Picture 1 (tube, helix red, strand yellow):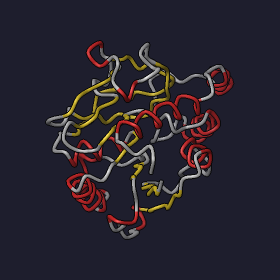
Picture 2 (cartoon, one colour):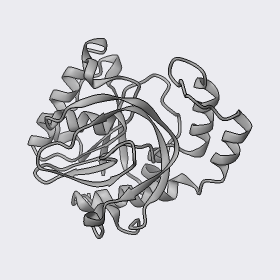
Picture 3 (cartoon, rainbow, N blue to C red):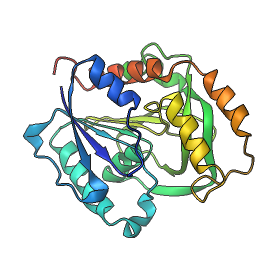
Length: 239
């Protein structure tokens, strides 16, 4: 499969679960540094776009004007029925491209949090093997309303649409970060705890946070399940 990865920050991890997945299945990957003004790829050069997360805000595109062009491009890609999967900011970009409102919540959703499957979504292809829900890493304050003609599959108490899919277009949005390894999470917490990027009302000591993170099952297992499910749902399994 030919994959285009869209990046939004300079401090993106060198090795994420996306990299491990691409290596395991021998996919081809090309990086598009959107924040640096890289050209968007021609539609015939890829089979799937993966939208990484980022610290930008879609309710304030003027602070990062390239978000206007990216959202417009993703809208055109989906209209042409080219598949897109997004994580955190990436899911918000998909929602924005499909016409949904993006907004900032009162509280940040941060840490290892249980994602709950909606009863009506049990049995959905994207959730195969995950019907009881799962724990994944969250780091966001921005949320989105469910786009028109989309279905919400999972939620948390803070975010109503942790996973959504489109009925009309080949899109899957994950509001959380299954692509983060435990090492990435520990590095980000150590780097940004107490800074303007991570202001928490209650912050765990570093040793305690790392201990809790080490107790979480290998995040690649969840990521592989979700991505393989999404690929099958988008009919890309044999690409």
